[in-house]
Image (cartoon, rainbow, N blue to C red; front, side, top):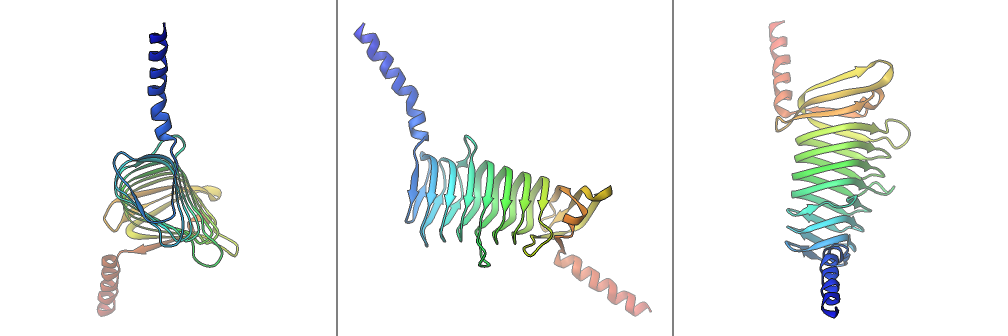
Length: 247
C-alpha cells in the first residue's frame, strides 16, 4: 500500500515538473543569454546597457525596459497569450526564430524618442499590434502576419522588405500627434471603399515581395508615405528627361 502511495506521489511530481519549469521567471539587470534548454514564462530585461541574446529555448512573455536590448536569433516566443512589450528606449531586434504572439506592444514617451522593434528575419505573427508614443516598428525582412494593427500618437512604422500581411489597420491620422507609416517599394495600389470605409493597400517592397494591408480607410490612407524604390525614381527621372527632349 505504501509502495503504491510512493508511486502516486512520484507520478504527480513528474507531471508537475513541466509546469514548474515553464512557470520560471527571470529578470536580466545585466547582459545575458537564453539558449537551447532554457524555458521561461516571464522574461524582464532592465537597466541601461543590458543586452540579452536569445539563440534558442522558449519564452512566453518578454518585457524590455530602460535602454536595454533584446536580440533574438533563434528559439521561440509562444505559449499562453504570449506577448512582447517594448517600453521606454529599449529595443527588440529579431533576426531569426519564431514569435507567435497574442500581442506585440511598443510603448514610448513624449520626449521624441520611444522603444524600437526591428524584424530582419524570422517568423513573426501577432493578433494585436500597437505602436504609440514615439515608438518605432521596422519591418525589413522575414514573414510577418498581423491581425489588428494600431499606430497612433507619433507612432512610426518603416516597411521595406519581407512577406507582409496585415488584416486590419487602425491609423491615427489627425490631431497634434499623428502616426506615420513609410512603405518603400513599387507598384502601390489602393482600392478605396465608398463612404470612407475600409479599403485595401497592396504593392511590392524593395525585395519584390508582395504586401497586403487591409482595413485602410481613405482618411487613414493619407497617413501612408508610399516611397518609390530608387530604380523607379531613376526611371521616372529618365522619362521626364526624354519628354523634355522630344518637346
